Length: 499
Image 1: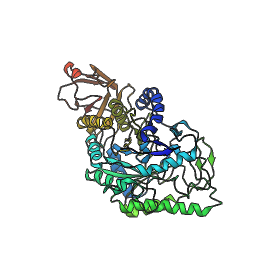
Image 2 (image 1 turned 60 degrees about the vertical axis):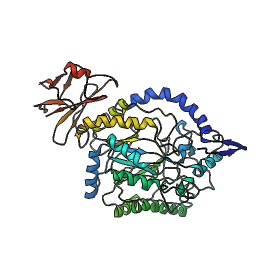
Image 3 (image 1 turned 180 degrees about the horizontal axis):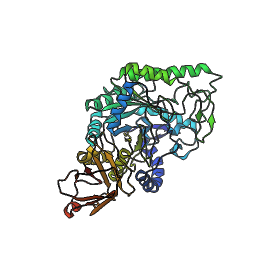
Image 4 (image 1 turned 90 degrees about the horizontal axis):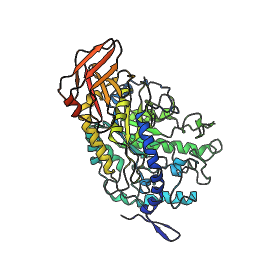
C-alpha cells in the first residue's frame, strides 16, 4: 500500500519518511538497548511521579479497585495515524526543545509545514489488517487481564466515533471510514470483553488539534494552551465542555468501561509544572470532580486514573517506565513499553522475554500491576516479535501464575535475584530469577527469611521432584537435584511454593 505526500512537487511515502526516522533509531537503539534492559531489571523508581495517595470513598470504586489489584498484568496500546511515519506518538507536534520529541524527517525544518503534513496523515490512515480478536487472543493467552486503549492522544486524533470533531478515524476524510470496523475503539472493547477481560479508555485531557486549546491565531510554545485563559475565558469554557462531552460519549456509548485512564497531568486544577519544573499559576480547571461524577452515572464503580494529579480522582498511581525498590502500600501500576517506543517504530528494539518476565515478577512482588505497551503498526497489526514475546510469557504463566494473580507482596530478600509473593491462601512463593534465558537452576538456593516465616513443605511449580530443604535460624537452604538443574520446568524464572 502506498501513502503519498507532496512537497516541492516530489512524491514522498511513509517508507521514504521512515528512511529519515530510521537513521536516528539505528544510531540510538544499540546504545539504548543495554541501558533499557538494565533499567528494566534494576529496581528504579521515578521520583518525579506523585506518591501521595487519596483512597476513594465510594465503596463501589473500592471493590472494583480491589478486583483490579488482583489482575496484575494488563495491555496498553498507543495507536494512531502517526504510526504511518513510525514517529513518537503526538509529541513531535509539541514545540519543546527536547530530543525525545524532536521533529524528524523531510518536514522537520519548518514547524507549520510539519504540523500540516502530520494532520494530513488522517487522509491516508487505512489499517486494513486490523483484527482486534487476534490481539485479544494473544493478550489472553499471555495472561493479561485487562486492556487500556488510546481513544485519543495529545494530537487530538480520535480513534472513536466522536460527534465533537471530524478529526477522527470514522470521518469520511479517512479511507478506513468505509470499513465496518472503522470505530476501532468499539471493536477493541468488544473483542477484549468477549475474552472476559476488562477494558479501559485512555483519554488525553490536552488536545493540540482543538482550536479552544491551541488557538490557530497564536503559535504554540509548549504543551500548554497557547492563550491567556484570563483574557479569553470563553475559549476555556468551550474546551471544558468539549472534553466533558467526549468523555461522556466514551462512558455512555461504548458498553461497559472499567477504567478511565486520563493522561496529560499538566491540565489540572490550580497550578501546573513546565518541563523545566517551573510552576505556572494557571487555572487549567476542567472540573474533574464533575467529570468523574458524570462518568460514574453511566459506569458505576468506574476506576478513574487522573494521572499525576494528586487528589481523589487518581484512584491508583502510575509510575512510568520505572520500578520501586520497595513495597508500596497504595494501589499502583507501572506502565512500560515492550519496545523502545510507546508508538510503532519499524524494527523497534523489543525487550527480551527474560527482561519482561523479570519485570512482571518484580512489579508484582512490590504490590503493583504491570501494564505492558505494544504499538500497532499502520496496517493495523503488531510486529511478529510482539506476538512471540506474549506467547513465551503465556507459557511461563501457565506454570507459575498462582504466584502472580491475586497475590500480595511477601518480603524483599536481600539476596540478588530473589523475589517473594504471598498467595491467596497464605502460601509463600520464592521467585528465583534466571541470570540468562538459557540458564538452568542453581544447585543451591539460599535466602534469609523473617523469623515469622514457618515452612512445613516446599515444592517447585511445574515439577514433582522431591526437594531437600532446611530452615534454621531464619536461613532457608534449598538443594536442587541435578536432573532438575539441567531440565527446569520453565525458562526465565522459577517459583518455589512454601506452605
